[in-house]
Image (cartoon, rainbow, N blue to C red; front, side, top):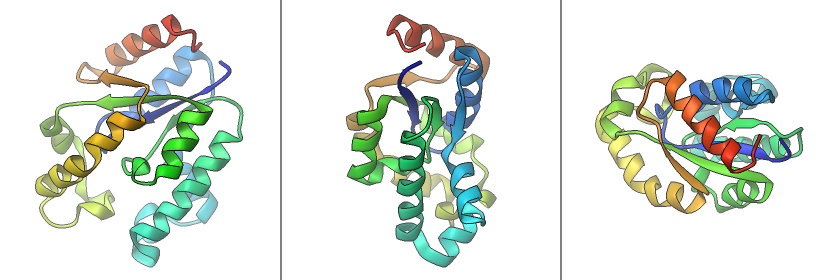
Length: 170
């Protein structure tokens, strides 16, 4: 693989789950950007949000994305809000293939745990609907491929791997 594969989409769409499986199928490294941020910053995502707010977290996220772009090509699971900064969209599109993992919003709402998501305070379902409405056009614009991720993880990953192989990405 000579380019990164960036997985984008809402929280609960399957970026980390599919990303790990996809990297294994393609025999390449996997990076979960949230894990990379926590390791670099020495604190959890909720701690970063509490101390620095969304704006401070986004600075950390862009720095982590830059580090990922400079690494060996790999599958990168991004955070749901990565597309809110134009710089991030340009970085991803310039360094690889951007795949939007899309699922029905109600499925994502059902799968997301609120206790680990600092930007879901209050009514989780309403907050996710608001975030999706604000981000949907950004996902669409950032993505080279929109991938329907409503199958079970193993089946979805196999289907995505086949699609990527057809595009010469493995």
